[in-house]
Amino acid sequence: MPEQSPAQASSRRNLKRLFILRSLMIAGYLLGLLTAHFFVNIELPMTPLLIIIGSLTLTNLWTWHRVRSTAYIRDREFFVQLSIDVLALAALLYFTGGATNPFAWLFLIPLIITATVLSANATWLMASFTAACYTLLMFFFLPLGGENHMQHSENFAQHVFGMWFGFVLSAALIAWFVVGMANTLRQRDQLLAEAREQALRDERLIALGTLATGAAHELGTPLSTMAVVTRELERADVSAPMQKKLRILRDQIERCKRALSVISASAGEARAEGGSLIEVKEFLHRVVEEWKVQRIDATIETRIDSSASAAYIVDEYTLHQSLINLLNNAADASPEPLTFIAGWDKSCLKIDILDRGPGLHPSVSSQLGKCQNSSKEYGMGLGLFLTHATIQRLGGRIALFERDGGGTCTSIQLPLATFS
Image (cartoon, rainbow, N blue to C red):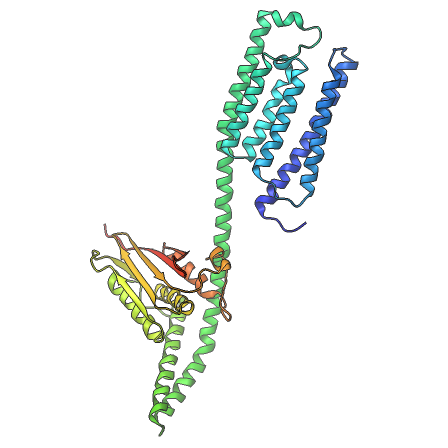
């Protein structure tokens, strides 16, 4: 059997439990029928009763086939299966005294199952369905042999009405309280699953931080050697074009050394500068200018709301790097200029990065922030994962959307500093 999602596996297990329960009910129906007919000497219409039980048995065989198959089991199918049980029970009760039969309380079983497994709407629908069947059985039924005199007894009529009222009240209470408790359990399970997922992401980030610190130590010496060699070459008698290339190489080496120093500072080896408050407008201009220095081959159109009131944001280097990484991803994908739109109010900064690339890769859009994933040929998938983790750590959100006319819109929301 192919691998199934947790929800589908749960639906299949529930259907299997229903098959087992129905098998026990069928056995109970047959045992009760034979006992009443042969030992208690109650006159019963055996033919229609056996037809009903046989039909329910065939239904159960079909249920077992569905359990064994690989077909997708929906909640609607599970509700229909329970409704068949209700109809079979109503038919059996019709030929065995209707609402006067002491086993009419069995209507509660499919209702309880529905309230535990299915939605609130399905539960209320099942409650209405079972209550309607019970109500009809008060007026339409075949009395058991020897009970005709009891149907005219006022006390017995009150007893049957009390049984009906108790059932309807029980059905309403089950639909109300059990559904509420089932929803609470589902919400708890969802919160636990989210907490486990967050813990796994945190462990992955810690592992990446450890590897990054080790890489900073390993790369420090080679970069220093390259910087010394580059300076010596610049002093040598070389042509002007070569001097220009050496200066570019030196700038790139210095950029790598700065990045490694930030990694070391984040690991606690030194106190990284930053973390202070800065005006949002200045922060955005710094990010865009820093990106332009790195990507001199790309163009960008900036639309920063100049009419917005002054607001402040934490000037953290990791946030710079996250936004630059998103700009780099957009520039790599888009043959046309990027569009950078930013606006803010007193509490929130919203940034949209628009590109005209090929659009969202399915694996990236579905696994955003959950794991390392890259649609690039040589990408390791770390950039978007770390960017999502950084923005989430700062209390922000990131989302990717398909852009009208082709391309992607990367939307970022970041909280701003508030002053009481």
